[in-house]
Amino acid sequence: MKVAELRRLEQKGRTMEEFVQEFQRAARKSEYEGRALVEEFKRGMNGAIRRKLIEAERPLTSIDQWYKCAASLDKHWRESRREEERLRE
View 1 (cartoon, rainbow, N blue to C red):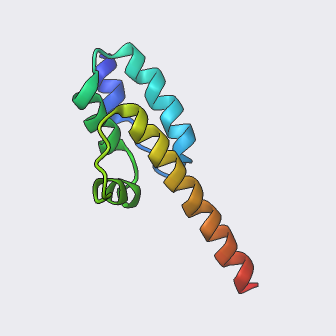
View 2: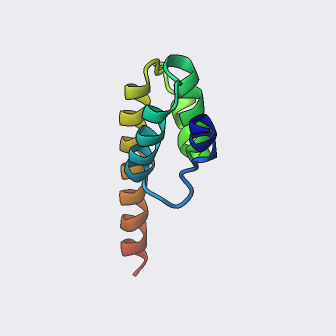
């Protein structure tokens, strides 16, 4: 049951920080750990961020690395979009 909750999670329009928090809550209730947990996290995140992290020069190995790098990329992407919108005004 708890694994199904984890598998249903998707980032969609939320910030990565929001997604990470919800994912961590669900992960604690599941029995997933290690590589299986990373795979579920990758599956639920938005595709553009996932691709950038998969293509990174240094592969991420731990779930904590995935959380941190994904949140950083998402934050920079959102800041970049705000800046682009501001410059178009």
